[in-house]
Image 1 (cartoon, helix red, strand yellow):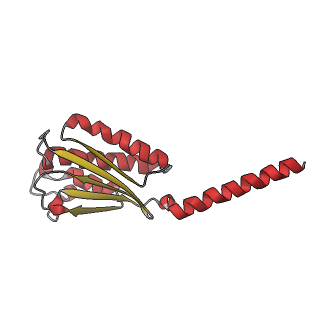
Image 2: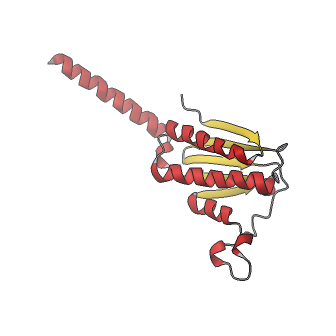
Image 3: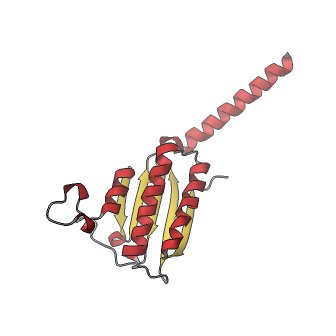
Amino acid sequence: MIKNLRKLEFKSLKQNIHLIEKFVDEICDDFNIFNSYFGNIIIALTEAVTNAIIHGNKNNPLKKVIVTFKSKSTGLSFSVEDEGDGFNFNNIPDPTEVTDIKIEDTQKGLFLIKSLADEVHFYESGRIVEIIFKVSSINNDLTLERINQLNQYSSVKKEKSIEK
């Protein structure tokens, strides 16, 4: 059975970043997500979790990172939450337009997340980032309709083979 809501919670340790791959892999398997979306999801979430551990929770293993997945009619929604103080997400320099500051001082991870996802939203003063991938095949009603059509086709095919 496909779960439309899942949570992953872990301590702010860099070695826990690998947990994201298994989390995303299972979700993408359940929803038949392949190709570029899979890669985009893995990279965007890895960046968001890395930011949560390093910048949000300041590498404090006593603090947690929470990743929440929700299936929506328009696609997949992932939220990454840390226990830090947040940040000013309205004042993020574009690393492609850097002039008077060093490239190392820009928010390259956020730029990458925004480039790979269809939508990115910040909540709780930047402590929560929601990353949305608009995968049209996620529509649950359409999926159920396709399953019913396949079942009807299979039963008709069986009837015809019995008649012969």
